Image (cartoon, rainbow, N blue to C red; front, side, top):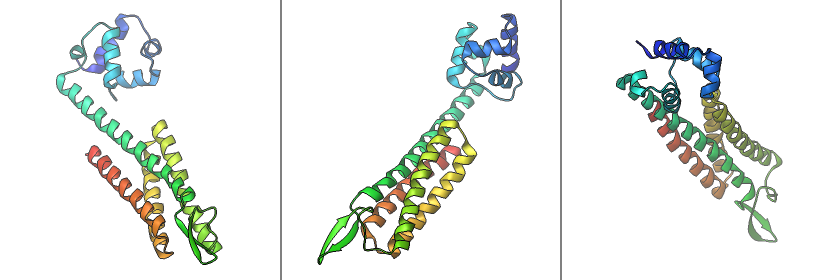
Length: 205
């Protein structure tokens, strides 16, 4: 007997509806329906709750091979989520490009390092591009973290691509406008993203 049939039988033996079981396990009725129809399996923690609730062992619910498969899938999912959290967090560090004194400003023949707010010796167009780039990275980071929280994986992948595109453009544009300190920081952020992305790709294999 497969897991979905066992779960359905255990629930009916207790005289419970799917909704009542869902409430007892603190999950949605849709989740219970999905498990009982064989379209998915609960995670390890929920399996423990099911085992405890019905006073049966996890081995009675699932074969060792299937349990191992679920654990492996859950581990990969956790790694992906962690990588996505880190990717979004790295984008949030783009605010440093605004507040740190990374830009050279000349006052009475003296060169000072100033932040983007005080940077005056730059064309209005270039400064606008700077603000758009850094704001884009910051917004990307915030939205990325929201998508990870809500589990919107498809939207998250698109946002990762957009973030990388903005980051690469920022490296090129800052290099062309000769902002040495800023380009180093942006390049470091890009490298960190690259490492995180590689770990995410490995987790998906």
